[in-house]
Amino acid sequence: MKKGKVRSNLRMWAGLTAAILAAMSLYACSGGGSAATTAAPAATAGAPAPEAQPAQTQTAAAETTAGAPAPASTEAIPAPAPAAAEPKKLVIGAASDIVTLDPQNQTQTNTQDLFATIGAFLFKRDLDFVIQPDLVTDYKQVEDTVWEFTIRKGVKFTNGEDLTASDVKFTLDRESAPDSGLAAWTYYKCITGTELVDDYTIRITTDIPRPDMLSLLAMSQAVILPEDFITANGMEAYILAPVTAGVYTLKEWVPDDHYTLIPNPDYYGEKATWDEVVYRPIPESSTRVSELLTGGVDLIYNVPVNEWGRVSSNTDAGGTSLAYGETSRVMLLIVRMTDGQPLSDPLLREAVELAIDKTTICDALLQGAGVPTRTRVGSSVPGFNFDLFGAQADLYNPERAKELLAEAGYAPGELVLDMTASSGRYLMDAEMAQMIAAYLQEVGITVNLELVESTVISTMFTNKENKDLLMIGLSDGQYDGCYPLAHYGDLERGAGQTDYNSPECQKLYQEALVEMNEDIKQEKEREIQAIAAEDRPHICIAQINAIFGVNNKYELNPRMDTNIVPDEVTLK
Image 1 (cartoon, rainbow, N blue to C red):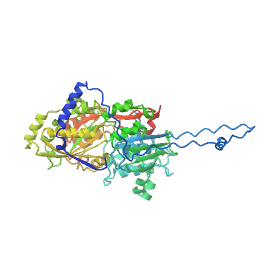
Image 2 (cartoon, one colour; image 1 turned 180 degrees about the horizontal axis):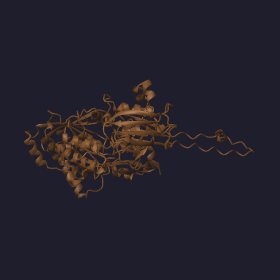
Image 3 (cartoon, rainbow, N blue to C red; image 1 turned 180 degrees about the vertical axis):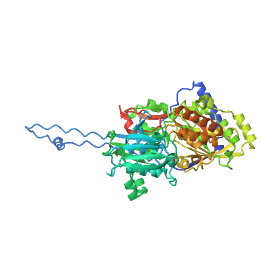
Image 4 (cartoon, rainbow, N blue to C red; image 1 turned 90 degrees about the vertical axis):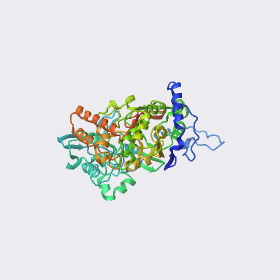
């Protein structure tokens, strides 16, 4: 799909409800089993051809004139020099491009992938999602609201400058500044002060006790920035060519085409596994699958259901297979509840949820790669509310939805909603959006559906440009219940996006943030989820699994955050 919007008025989907019912019938008759296998799509015009391998270099001793006999010699002919090993190159087919090279002004997964790979952090999460020290060598909580961190010496940025505690201070001061306007500010505004103890020790003060401090510092937005470079050249120069300190460095970024990483030779930790890592954004799912099957890429994100059989049975280019992973990603509708907007009426929000058959979406469309849910919190995240998950999370009742519309004063077809969704970013996202729109049409809600590229969705989400409904997949970058619940408990977080204002949720959220007893904290988080489920600033649809396509030469163990960390991919 070309970048921009593809408008689909729901009247085009007048027959889709019948198709959904037919799909349900077929699914039931087939026992809800195997995914369909489709023919390979034609190659996309203009797609880059696979790179030619470098020719082997012959030794002078082996060269002879064509057709002439080799001269006799009494001397032993030296053996040819061994061929140089081919560079170890990994090519990843992503569903979308990165959106910015400012790590503190983004909340997008692909951009987080990049900075998790090229950046240095105080802490990082390992493959099992356990927090591990990265730059930090020692830390302690001095007071309830004061933490002290000591970082390792000898770490250098890619421009040769030393990384010190002053760079940590600069980083945290920038993203916690009230007037920063950065996407990260909502998470780091709790930091009220930073103090240098010495060149490699820093103290961080927060407005309230923050037991989640380490997980905050392990988020992708906490990548350490080079103070001297940015002070001298401006953030604009950093965005053009990031100066980082991670295991890889960014060689180039060609927007909408690729970005390339190469090893950082001065990295302080274990050296890079790959000589080159290339990420190629391929928004169209069928094109992404074709590139995997023909060897154009080694790994891909989000294999659609109708391609599972083809990926699993493919034997070309060494063969391919599927890799499944549990995630905390929830597909949901962001609801604009602003005063004066149609969905400020709770009756209409309830009607929207009751019109949607989540079970059919999960079983027939996603083929079991999703579970109905009514909570933004993922099932593996501490504080998850199990009462809002599974079969009990599907409230499908179209007749009651019609009654609610009538109670709100709308005749069939009178309520018109604008809805935006991505195509190719998440598992079966365009198809899911079309099914949801058809369900709403069935109960008498007219929907203007726009399908856009994933970078457009990311920008709309970050800039709070959503209309009545925005379908998006949100995950938990902090692996803590309070992270996703900021949408409900932090008034500023929802302002301009949902405009949700629940004093009860705000009170529980502030209490959960400072609660040191984990059991009490999680109980408050579950209460917030129950309230939000009834208020519906988000109408949650399904928690989805990650489905990767992998060339059989490689081993991939999917992470909870769905990031592909290059050095966690291994050759078999």
